[in-house]
Length: 338
Ligand SMILES: NC(=O)c1ccc[n+]([C@@H]2O[C@H](COP(=O)([O-])OP(=O)(O)OC[C@H]3O[C@@H](n4cnc5c(N)ncnc54)[C@H](O)[C@@H]3O)[C@@H](O)[C@H]2O)c1
Image (cartoon, rainbow, N blue to C red; front, side, top):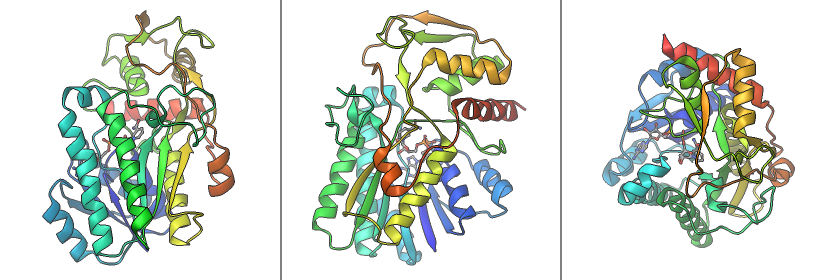
């Protein structure tokens, strides 16, 4: 069975391609390489011994999107990762984000309708919840006004898919709301490749640990959390990748309970910034250079998932520990340093 993975050379997409291939799916990848490199194909092949079919294509090019589907008509499902994801950049350049994250989604959905491809998985985010009133966060928590254009593209994306599912007699879709993906493949063949200064905590930690950055700033140490620093639900990217395989199989086998479903993908456990640093220091045997800095405007204080729905309905749960994820990220950092 053939699955199309858009953004399949990116961080989460590449790990998902590996899991799909290991489950016997044939994978077709679209990516415009705006935030990835062709060498990711080697990493995938080194792990699975299969090089997925790859097409360098920009999903903003509507006619290219339609000609792609014209030539690949036997696709059973689409996992749509392709998007821009830097929150700060989205504030600076909102139209880039609305074009790249919303317009492209519309084109892909139009193509699915035209070519009668019925199974669609969407990369959503826990950013749709903002600072939730209750923890852990369930899928029923209200979607709050987005803190950034990036967050808004995820909310709008879910609405577009839901509206389309309401009128389509065929389309089935699942939005996976990721908490904080971290780590790398245990083989160190794949991992996160931030361009420029990392926007996320873990690559910043590993780059500081290896000497690429002088110091990590921990923004805020006086929040009402376990140790005063912000708390997030860090999910190993391989666990996250496996959730996509289960989700797409659910749709292909018509096991879904309604045409549009949403699931939290997290561990269910919150970890503070200091706990992540301590985990890194433990697994790497390195002391991290960090200091406290003032709170950042707009930072959510605490967010972690209630995972009951995904566990009971998809039979998925996170398996890796924070230490395992941090060790894999560290091994990856050491690999790419060479
Ligand atoms: N990493 C996170 O912390 C996180 C959290 C929640 C949700 N998400 C979402 O998950 C998805 C994947 O995230 P990631 O961390 O793997 O990001 P990534 O940047 O590593 O991967 C995205 C891939 O999409 C490609 N791409 C971007 N625009 C494209 C376009 N117009 N046409 C074709 N390809 C395009 C990029 O080159 C890149 O390879 C994104 O939708 C992101 O918003 C990520």
